[in-house]
Amino acid sequence: PLVSMRQLLDHAAENGYGIPAFNVNNLEQVTAIMEAAKETGAPVIMQASAGARKYAGEHFLKHLIQAAVEAYPEIPIVMHQDHGQSPAICQGAINLGFSSVMMDGSLHEDGKTPASFDYNVETTKKVVELAHKVGVTVEGELGCLGSLETGQAGEEDGIGAEGVLDHASLLTDPEEAAQFVKATGLDALAIAIGTSHGAYKFTRKPTGDILAISRVKEIHARIPNTHLVMHGSSSVPQELLAEVRQFGGDMKETYGVPVEELQEAIKHGVRKINIDTDIRLAMTGAIRRFFAEQPGKFDPREYLKPAREAAKKLCAQRYREFGCEGQG
Ligand code: G3H
Ligand code: 13P
Ligand code: NA
Ligand code: ZN
Image 1 (tube, rainbow, N blue to C red):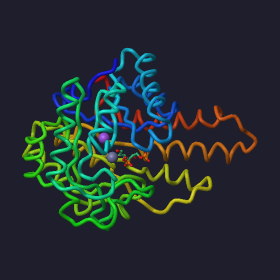
Image 2 (image 1 turned 180 degrees about the horizontal axis):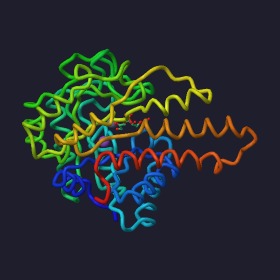
Image 3 (image 1 turned 60 degrees about the vertical axis):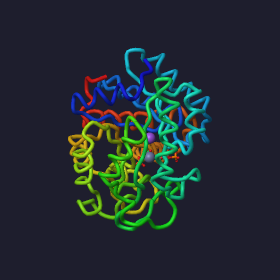
Image 4 (image 1 turned 45 degrees about the horizontal axis):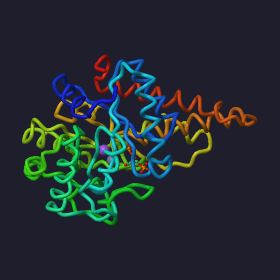
């Protein structure tokens, strides 16, 4: 059934596990996630970004997820709007039937300019008021995603803050987090600890100076009852990069968030872990391999099938690694 995100995150907190929230844009991704959840017995959070809405349209996204709810009635599913940039956008998603929304007031409506604490409180609080009336969960964000190496948001396709961010705004402050949660009444808080969206997060395997898991612990110690969310949490597996390269892809050296660091974060209050890039890499590697090995093929079903298999494998792996097995 379709459930609120609060319900799943509360269960995850009580039982000490984390839930990967996978971004969806098309049928293949939705069915890959559902098959992985079925295989592992995991609960599901699927999220639609502004980019997804632009690509597929909100009606198709809604009905793709709705179709999953019908096809897998035994699995709890959250339909979450990722990075809503205004109360109006969040209201639109709620009207469509989303059971959870993110109001990202860490940036202004352009999705690029960092916003003040007061602006963030005001917009997030507004969304909490309209969402809670109808049982919809709200995720907020405090701090800006971006690299502690370069100060840049690091997103190759233009999502996230523009220009170079100062060190303080790249790390969520525990005291401010406590104030923010109290002032807004939100259900889940996305924090900034040095991760960024996309494949190019770190130029080397991250150590504590560029991936601040210690900050997760400090925030959790200050607000132990708040569900924490990590964005930009793809691990960018080296074997997926190697497959993309082996079959003609052109990707630079790069590193993501190691799974063991995510597991450590889950021990300290992180309940929702956002993953988009790893699915992209898995599907792209499989499709590149298919075309390289079978250049005569042209039926999309034939090359989307291994892409979907690769995505399913990745999702099932994360469900197991984050402790979701049998929790759905
Ligand atoms: O928020 C970041 C996600 O990876 C979604 O990216 O806007 O390209 O769909 P997108
Ligand atoms: P990745 O780019 O690391 O997969 O992060 C996705 C994300 O945070 C979506 O909100
Ligand atoms: Na989100
Ligand atoms: Zn994000």
